[in-house]
Image: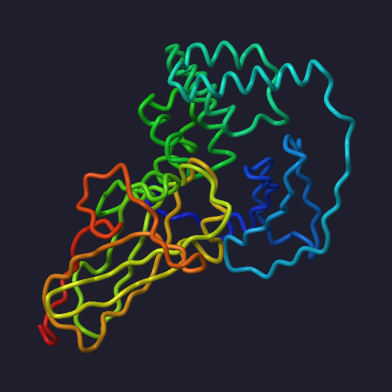
Length: 325
């Protein structure tokens, strides 16, 4: 059933990463019924900025009791001159890919040894390069590899579908299409906040509500660049007769925006109660990001065709109907 949502047991319970201003290594941990009470998880990483502090971060992705007993660091011999040369070549390929020169990026990346396990940006640059070169099979294989690391990578999902799923087994294709459906909002939008997070839209159920009733609002975001801290969202429902709010910290379960990964699309649900005394009518929905711990400054808005007011985008409307109707 392509419409079946993923079972809770299929979802990762924990995301671990190593961070020094950017994510150096990342791993998602799933649990099975046969798992013991304790697990050891290893992450290999190269600290390319020894002048910056290392952060070992754990984000709980669904309801579970998780505790970290300790973190052990095991140094390994430093890379050779050849390894440094390969790193430079990989970085050159990334830069070329960012410039849209995917053919040149592909050449540069193929000449270099991949990072340990192949990091996500390297895999994406290769996929784009193969796609630009017309090599659909190789491109799709690398987009699939990227989805193994970041299951809801928006570009990888859309690109594989556009390529026609070459070489992708039917079961994997159905899973990718299911993911696409999961991250497609009812009310689509595009707005970039602070140059790092892109609002993609929202879904509301039911489409109208009476005073005192609950509605489920699903928000959709894309991480363009990783954040070093969590940020908060403000959502205002406004009409001539008054209004109400759904201010909150974006994120699924207990993971905030500081745990999001570049390219990842994140959706999460919120239950919003229409106040019992709310007047019937059409409520305009205004949404934005702000930092309550840094003086309450709102994030600047760019990359949108939506109306903008006080660094908030007009995302749509909600109908509140009279009681008893």
